[in-house]
Length: 291
Image (cartoon, rainbow, N blue to C red; front, side, top):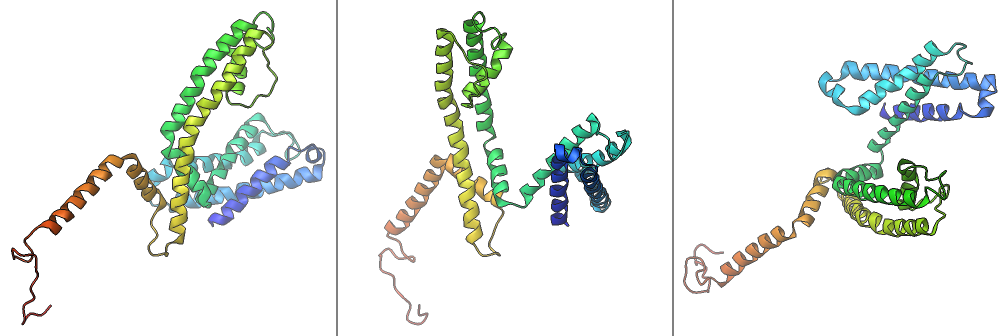
């Protein structure tokens, strides 16, 4: 049933994208076909959500899950279009329908349960939450500084592109993320110097946190590949074991101390003169007890 739901999700997304084409909006038969596909998907989503809600063991846990709310919102575009469109099914949909239809696209996140790569990416983002927050802070501070400097340098020579500091945020964000659309460009020598510094600093700012996120992804990916090679009975969940590996890598001093203690105990046992209750190092076997 899960795979069937994924097929209907893909079908509904394709129908929503195709119905925005000009060739479809001008053809009444094609428009009617798109509405029919959307109606079939809407009925399926309604029946599926109702069955899942009726058969779930805990209604409280069902309500707490975000994807269930996404599924609930995904039902409404079909009915909203019927109620708000004047000349249904050939009339133009309302803005309420478009907003709900865009929210329905979030159902594509269900593919995270199917593909192992999506699961690895999800766990990488969760494990790298601190690095992501650091990346956001490292982007916000230079954006404010360079946008203010660019505004002061360009407000007289180029007032259209740099009309205010808030308007200069767009140029600073595009420059510091190394995108560079080229729609807003400094023209004064001082503005070009600030633009060059912003572009050069962006390489350092984005490289440091992204390298940590990439190492976390490599850790999860290598662990997942190792789990795939193990027998089915000895496989374990990927998340907990990978987190354990990360904790070990984050605490090398503690692991080294425990290893040294273990080696020290083994050396003490080997160097001890008492063996089997005897002061000599030779081990004697009782003639009647055997080995």
